[in-house]
Image 1 (cartoon, rainbow, N blue to C red):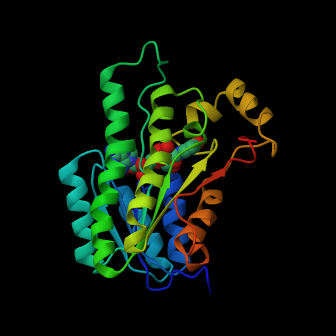
Image 2 (cartoon, rainbow, N blue to C red):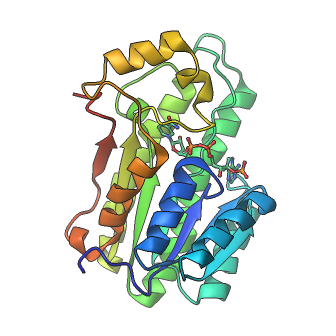
Length: 250
Ligand SMILES: NC(=O)c1ccc[n+]([C@@H]2O[C@H](COP(=O)([O-])OP(=O)(O)OC[C@H]3O[C@@H](n4cnc5c(N)ncnc54)[C@H](OP(=O)(O)O)[C@@H]3O)[C@@H](O)[C@H]2O)c1
């Protein structure tokens, strides 16, 4: 029962596919009503239907989480519909460029930072204000092993290191409001986002050879830690990072 999320109201950004979808469905299975947000409503509606099939309320919110007015609209829509937000999973992120640090341009920098870091921070701030009113909540940020040590995506890696530090800052500042803030750091996971990496036999071979478990992760394998971090089982846990990477960061 410590892991139950019965009666909780959750918002998952980037909930239309991949890791965000897997987390949204797992939250519903643990008992939460779940809102999913991203840019494409038809994809979100499909996930919302899957949540309703699990007997929970669902809401699909079209929002670009790199734009302030749309972040504000997203948080308001969820609060107005559910009456509260107990759980926020900041999962939406982008990496539009494979360029290395010597070549990457300002446009790519801005698009990565606007969504991965600025959007994450302000979605958290606005949601934390709602959580504060209702006595607390739990925020889980999705970083990456690239945020722990640099990999092959330089600015993405910088943004994900920022996510880990943002987690610690928010955890420190908002503990007084009974808001816990934690972070997961996935290794390579089989989604559309990372297809260019796992579909390339050379990159796949390099990653799996450096991973003690000898394989990449599946989206569903990212959800259990989020359920734990959002639940009463993690009641004394805040500001922490859990790597979900088959042991790669060892
Ligand atoms: N896959 C991996 O190997 C891996 C490894 C480490 C960390 N991660 C992290 O895991 C998280 C999820 O990644 P994923 O692999 O599941 O990616 P994915 O399958 O590409 O899904 C990304 C999600 O984010 C949404 N999104 C993209 N841009 C958005 C924007 N501007 N505003 C709102 N939503 C937006 C997408 O929906 P729309 O297109 O409809 O907006 C989609 O729902 C990310 O934070 C990523 O950095 C992934």
